[in-house]
Image (cartoon, rainbow, N blue to C red; front, side):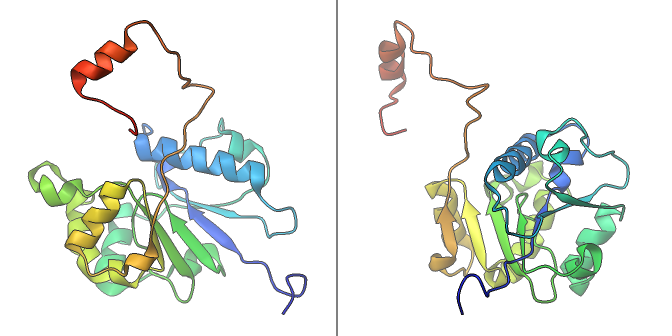
Amino acid sequence: MSHRAARWPQIAIDAGPVAAGPRSGIGQATAGLLDALTDVWPTDWPAPIAWINSPRHPLPTGDRWLRSGLWRVVHTRWSGKMLLRGWQWLDRPKLERLVGAIDLVHSPSGVIPSVRAARRILTVHDLYFRHRPEHTDTYGGRYFAATYPRRLPHVDACVCISQFTRAELLRFYPVDPARLRVIHWGVDVSHFRPEPADGDGALLASLGVRRPY
């Protein structure tokens, strides 16, 4: 089948972290991902879905991706705790029930949604909950610790933000190495730029920091 005859995929992003109260690092990374996708989205593809489950917080109306008009925003107001517990223990509700028919969903926060048939991609940032369980909460690290052993081997792909995170996944879980891809965090050059200063080399040497970082 030619590309012209093929049906382009309907893709959804779990954009919940952008509206989960004070924006965390994962929220910032998710917003940056949505901005970047807005700039490169193929014109002949279906409009991507940004799914935001936020019972209490409003949509981030100041975000560039949201103001672009490209995204089809689906805003649900389920209890986050009920949703996570349903996915963990009942494999319900299916995400398609919440957002409509989709071919693929990407979860930048690492949460594994239940689906009918859609392929699932996760971004896994770290496995802090394996090393410091006493610093985790019920619906954060403890939730990941409880769900990853059973659910992670069944996702279609994991984006790892570092080689270390990929090695940690292989160390702790029976995942297919071919499904793990290392894609480093991007850099917002409007905020972060290399500005060399006198003495940088001596400081890095004193700290034992050498290229490649």
